Amino acid sequence: MSDTPVTALLAALANASATVVDLTQPLSERTPVIQLPPPFENTPQLTRRELSHYDDRGPMWAWSVLEIGEHTGTHFDAPIHWVSGRDGEDVASVPPSKLVGPAVVIDKSAEVANDPGYLLTVDDLLAWEAEHGRVPDGAWLLFRSGWESRAQDSETFLNAGPEGPVTPGPDAALALWLASERSIAGFGVETVGTDAGAAGGFEPPFPAHHFLLGAGVYGLTQLANLGELPPTGALLVVAPLKLVDGTGSPTRVLAIVPA
Ligand code: MN
Image 1 (cartoon, helix red, strand yellow):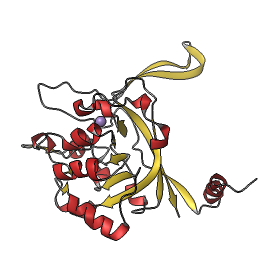
Image 2 (cartoon, helix red, strand yellow; image 1 turned 45 degrees about the vertical axis):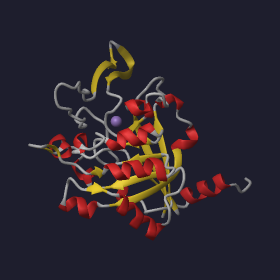
Image 3 (tube, protein in one colour; image 1 turned 90 degrees about the horizontal axis):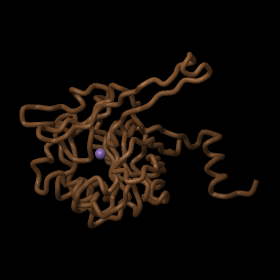
């Protein structure tokens, strides 16, 4: 077998000097989904209808039909999800080369533990870059907030208070900066959406959706295990359904991480 970058990677996986980390939350009927206030339409949680279970309906096989929102569980946001990206790509049009790339992680889990509405800022990113170097072109920027510890419980995960949901996310200036000053492929979070819980009141509303999807930068939500990734040096693989006209898709997200 000739030596290629791929054989080197396969050898690293075989001898455990690199490992595969699953960044995906388990998907079930209990997986939390976003809850919008009236008058907006909401997405259902996952439901399953059994077609057969090794019985008269199919004696040798088990299978089911799913009803699932495009934006359910660990999922991918395509540009056409947002009005600012309506002329952009659907999920099926996303080039596969953009679904594999460097992962960089900014960890504000300590700050979020003290302030669940913590807003990530341009200064946070500039401080990160001073330590780790410029966010690479084509990177997936992943915001570690520690929110994954709430991921199996809708009430604490959505964290709705009297003023609306209180969850972390980028402020409007950072969303604009990421969309215009860096060339990232995508922005990923542990929360139910790429915007902060309070972002409906920002100017513009939901700036991460507005600026990033408007610039063709993808979103990833409800990520897990970001604490197993180094700040730089991991390889991300994102695998949404190749859904024609899809605005988003539940997705498996894997990272290849040096040991
Ligand atoms: Mn979404």
